[in-house]
Length: 563
Image (cartoon, rainbow, N blue to C red; front, side, top):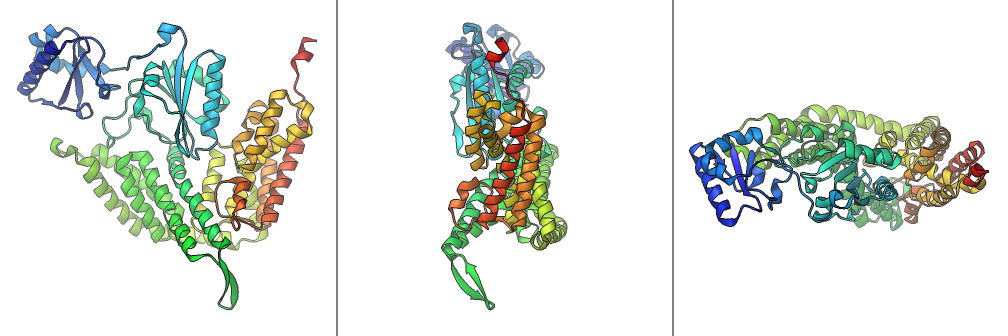
């Protein structure tokens, strides 16, 4: 057993060192190993009263021996009792806390798969609700551009509770020892008041694992769907970069005669860069699915499995399957492969990556690769050769799915499908996905303009913002309307999105980037044909907006109520 010994702040330099020396002698007599790092300890013993300056013990089990005389009298007994009597050590506030000021203090972290809309809207909702209650609040965003509004150690220490509203895997190690409540961006945005209440009722002490190679604790387990979202979120920037660069290559390309047919050939240097970016999409997807499951030990086998998925033609379907396989394999090896203590430190950096990568590679080459490559090829050929009727049906389904829950699970499934097919150079589904996803916010914005008197002043202002968000392909702009009137808003949006998606594929639209909305059209070649694509968005948005403007019940203003 590994023992780590620390001193309390009130111990005194002489007494503290003598007590530590006594415990070290007792540990040697009991054949216990005294380590110099809390991360490697099985149990931590703190001698003396006061706070512990060593922040590495936060969130770990610590046996506090307040009376130093006990150390000198019963040092061996203390070490024997430590594993059973140790309790999780919680941080103490370094600045004013709720107990001192009467004001509750909360900090939060928000993160969504794309890092664009839900991340910031959830943060704003939490801050607004806290402000209404007179609480102190600060929210750190983990968006597509990195960490925003970063929390300081002092702010974390003084918080009464931490809220992690995250749809993907994020590093929460800075909150070790704090009361932490886990939720998702959707509930944090739509049911903010209930989530803040639940945070104080259900938060538990957060204990990060002792090292990155160990399996995640039971309260940190994530759903299969969440692993996929983590992979998609890390893949997304590569899809955007690759798609736009390839589109640029065609914008600067030239027409050449190929097999007697005039074709547009992309500028070779840009085409090479875009192609290389595309080649990394599937490895990133599978690598970070595995990372979400098994932490760092899953990354190497996941990336290698993704590369083999590309080389065998298994595409994004193979990448998803092998990503899950690599992640769970690394997790099983980490948990259940018994090793001597002398070799335990080599597990995360040598043994797990070696075994998991080797097995994953062999499975991909000899078991998974061939059948999934056949399936992927069949799917690709069907999508490329489907007639107008099938295209319209597929487009309507994808467009409707994008409008069902506006950034929720159904929306993300359709989005992941369209994004994944870009790696196979199949661009039509993404056109239906983006066009359909733009409908809800555009429709709600139009409705507030058409039937202005039916909307309260706040909704009219939300409508203006919704129009801008719609142009940017941020479906979440319609959430305030859907949350307020779901039985009318959601059906209208689904109908409009289905019409838009169906029309987009009826026109033969193709889209080479998974984000950007109408602003992506500034680069020639990103979408074609432009006219049919824009008309699809316009028709679906107008139909949804007009229908909702007609069926919406007028808001009852305060003046009418008082009368």
